[in-house]
Length: 590
Image 1: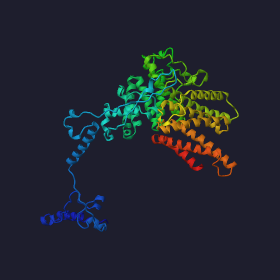
Image 2: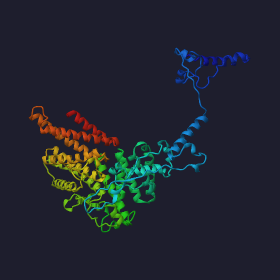
Image 3: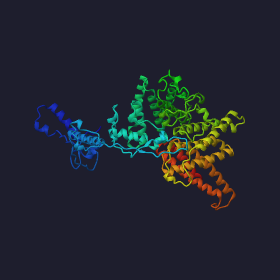
Image 4: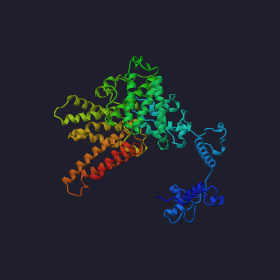
């Protein structure tokens, strides 16, 4: 039978005594009733166990029964609820004053009209122009402005303040708009609209979402809010059949966000639905001479201005390249877009061409013509920056697919002539593409650290050389010496770009991880071959032999690649397994 605490048993005896002897004297009753302790006067042990304490010292009743040698009492001074609420009110006022850029004591909190937003707006500076070879224009996305200092005037704890559908406060809107013009964002996505000048709620919130992602820091906690807003407004826009271009751009930005944050399946599904909608609107057939007029009966009708035509072209290629890249390199899922020969939309032009109405540089050549060297589409010296990004991404996806097919045909006894034809024409197209790219380094003696590298140009160099490796790597592993030479040539060219990125501290796209990992495989295979050569043919020391010196050079290149891959892994966790794999290989063999 359990033993009750003394005060409880005494209280029970008192009740039974009162019931059996109703005429008991008041003095005897009050002497037995235990006095209730005030708040915070229990001993620490009883407080932690959440049981009643009689407050006796040095040992209270419950602790004495539990054989605890001594009680510990601490002073406790409680606050009234009014004081607590006043403290919370003061803390909230301080946070709001910090956001508004005002002194907390200078604001009349009883008068909302006295609250004014006076926080400074960050100013944007101009990016250096990249001069392409003669015959090209310097207009368009090359002259976009880069953000100034990333000032964070927003307290993330106030995120509930933005749960309404109102436009974000100007300091937050300015900060996120600047993040969209940062080099890091421009390496990952084409030039984007300014969310402050966008009327469509779905597109505006999708742009703010991308801005939160690329700004990083505390603002990433606002991503779920803008994601929820963008999705809700997209459904409203689609249901009301209004602003179909805004809907498409918002939708492809949501797909990009899912891919960038490692949510591949969500990105694939979002991009697939966007692709189907874009095709239904005729965005895959924007070409001269009609410029999509045959699609006038479809949703959106024919383009009304050349600027609108340019926007349709840009949104189409954003969707197309994301569909090709995302499906291929995020799980091997099938593409949602039609066959290449059904696509006739022109390649992206310079923004100035759309603005001036000069579309004479546009041709009816599209995706399939890129794989045919005789068309000259793979010669890109005068292409707009966004055209370089699109063409290099398409070549990377095609090279990866053909590389697998060619290796299977090379190993098997039944050679497929169609595969080899596509393989060789794509290889020639890649050679023409890389050979016509403007160099990142104007001349050999240029100071690399002072170079103003252009995002789209760096992207094209990295991705195109990665495409060569994707095309030849499996054949090289199967024993093709020609493919092995092509892989080494592309790996060395990619390493030249890697050193420039490292020395200039340039931003990178997550797509670069495909190339960096492929280059590490080529270098690792060559290092193993060279090590076997000098260890099998020479006796130590090996320092004087060329094979040993080349191994040391490749080890330095691997160290550079690991540094770049770790930088990517800091922003994209999907890159971390590849970083660990390269590091384990280096630790095991060298």
